[in-house]
Every structure is written in structure tokens, then in C-alpha cells.
Image (cartoon, rainbow, N blue to C red; front, side):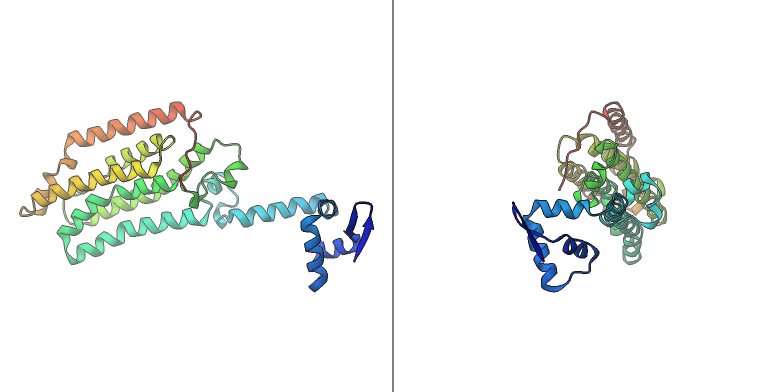
Length: 277
């Protein structure tokens, strides 16, 4: 089972080979494993006993197991970086489905409060998707990013683009299907884009969660107060009278988004990724 050298006892070469091939079982395997934990020489011997081609193949299998890419993303580096992890893909699909199903189901029961709640909360989902691009659960700049030559912030941008690509169309569909004027119900789109852009720009230096909560909370409170003040008016008039649907608010949203995007484009290689656990 073991041989003795000047440096002490070591596992026999044949035992190491059997352990490597999976042919060593029971107490013998346990003994070799225990020895390997405290013996650097035997670990080195075990590593050198594996051909280079087999080592490369094992590393490839390990990378696939860790990254767990979706089948459709295995042949594309961009797709693997942007949406290869199942957590991110599942989140995008789940949020997009909820964006359509939940408000429509609520509207079937009571159209007015469902429409008001949708308008109040609609920007929160794209902004939440932007924050998710920073989250460790999506592994935006984890082991996968360390193995790529891309700047970590660019990987965040790619992941956010995937999430917004799923959420924004779903929200637009829900807006068109809900009762009320589509023009008024689509008033959340530009502010949502502005909020997402601002979270990306500011989130490199500060916690993006707090920025997202502040922006979405202010929007929801404004919609709720406006709808409460017009609770006796017809739904169309109430939506038309909301501050968030005014030209000024929409113009400010466009300006904020433009400034944030310009900042990101000019400083994309200087911005440091700020991890959000």
C-alpha cells in the first residue's frame, strides 16, 4: 500500500494509478485520499501521472459542469457569457411571463386597481433585471468572467441587455392588452429605460439595489398618489391626469437615459464593477 522514502511514507505508484482510474475502493481508497490531503509529493505524482490530453479534457468537463450552460449557448461565447447560466435564463423567462400574466389576471377581477398597480410597478421589473446583472446569483463576473478577456462591466452590460430584451416586450404586450389608453399605459417605458441606464451608470460606484429601490419607489408613490386623487374620475381621465404621463416627465426620462448612456459609452473601460452579493 505504501513505500518509504527519505521524506517519509508515500502512497505506492500502483495505488495512485488505481485510485486515479477509480479501481481503488473501501479502506484502501480512504487511506490514499487521507494521505493525499497531507502529502504534496503524492499529489504532484498523481497529477503528473495523468496525460496532458486527459488533463485538458477533464478541465473542459469541469468548466462545463461549473458554468452549466444551456444547450443553445454552448457554441456561442457571447451567449454563454450573456445568458448561459440557468439562473439568469430562468429569471428572465419567469419575470417576462409574470409581467404579462399577473396584471391581466388582476384586470379580469377588477380593471381599475389592476391598471393602476401595473403602471406603478411596471418600471420596477426592467430596473430589477438591470440589478440582477450585478448579482452574484447570476455570476456576471464570477469564475466565467475571470476566464474571459472581456472587461467585467461589459459582461454585465451583455447580461442586462438579455434581461431587458425579455422584459420590455412583455411589458409592452401587457400595456396593450390592459384596459385604458395604450398611450398612457406605455408611459412607464421611457422612465424604465432611464432608470435602468442610471442604475448601470451609478451602480459601478454605489450599491445598485439602493438606487433601484429609490427610483422605483418614487415612481410608484407618484402613481399611487395621482390615482388616489382621481379615484372618482373615469379610468382614462385618471391616467391622463397623472404627472408621470406628462411630456415633461417623459422628456426628463429621455435626457437622463441619454446622459447615462453617454457616460457609459465614454467610460466603459474605466468603470469598475461593483459587486452586489
